[in-house]
Image (cartoon, rainbow, N blue to C red; front, side):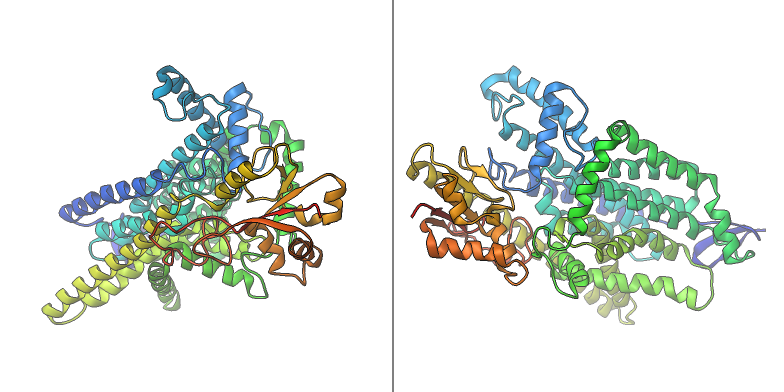
Length: 587
């Protein structure tokens, strides 16, 4: 006999429960949602592809060299052994293949090609190609997010799930943090895109438990891990999706958990994840000694307090403030508030049946599966000592989904009103809320994109140095400094020597960048020697030139964007970049 239980599940017997697949709305509503999704994809592509040439032929992003260097070596030589293990190699192999194909095509068309001749030793070409591939992946990631959101909203029972899913996809397309890192040759957006695909597979695991979804979830997680190592943590979502669907009430909880953990499908998903990662990053095994050495360095850097300065979030409440501030800015405030509302409703949907000791409905089980990974990352982030915004970028798609759920919560309350006129007003108001949040995001994105079309302060400083410094002059700089030919790059250690030591070594000039020295001067008690060095430059060296950004931010509006983008002016006086100072060290 078939009976119906809470959440729309069909109980076939006392020991078997088959979740019913959620209805994804009417055909007409689905058509509107898909049409809107196409528009969202177009907006996402335009907002990313229009700024690919920022800073070229030089790069002003800290991690692009870590990608461009191995890609260049792999594409030019065909040697798949990476020059470093800061990142796995799956994404590097893919970029190298695209760069090689593009170089062959560009050489064939000659001067008609952008950056022609597009030989592989042309860094401008490599940066452009790797940025373009990343931008396209970042734009297309709105599609799997739409699919995930639509299934979730249908299971929750919200009206118009396809349209609300399209709005969630729009929130991602215009998310400041997602927009910022999509046109950068860094692995954060691609790994997050694969995680969205993995999230869709975990939903299907929770719904029907078919073996193919375990395999596909393992493949997607393995590919995400092959782009950036920490994505392997998504395994907790697969585990949660598997265990949460095993809700046979006839057995005690410990029996259900033990039986679930020994399920061959779960182990198959784990083996597929590992196999996919190893196949796409084989030298993790083939060159394990060097891999472990490099990973030791990366781990020490991440967990050693103060390694690169406490610029992103510091103090006793840093772990909580880091996540809250990153998502507030990374989503933009209206969408972040909707995300908080959606999170509250999600918790309520899960807690209520537990409090009443009822079987979890399908919607609650889907929410547990979807929120397991963000929760694990958030808890893990408490241990981090370096806190750039990009480390939490994988949380942004899930937050956009929750923002759509928050919008659905408001809509649901409006449709519960007794008066037909009041319900119509509520629908109009919710539509205006969604449109207003999207337009507010778009305002910041447009301002940011226009800012990137202006000459960077580093470019301005490099041009001045080329025109005014004597040929062959010895110049030292730090990370985020001007791209002056022949300049000696000191990384984070420019302040590790005194002016006298530089003079004895024959160094005549120094160029500083606020994106680096703010890390030390903002915390002079913690870094007294480094802060003293910059003070000594002002007191004992000669300031020759200064390039100032407009507007002035306490830190990097392009690299981290903690202040938001709505204050960026639209006039031509806007200028991105750090405060650049060029000093003559000789007395």
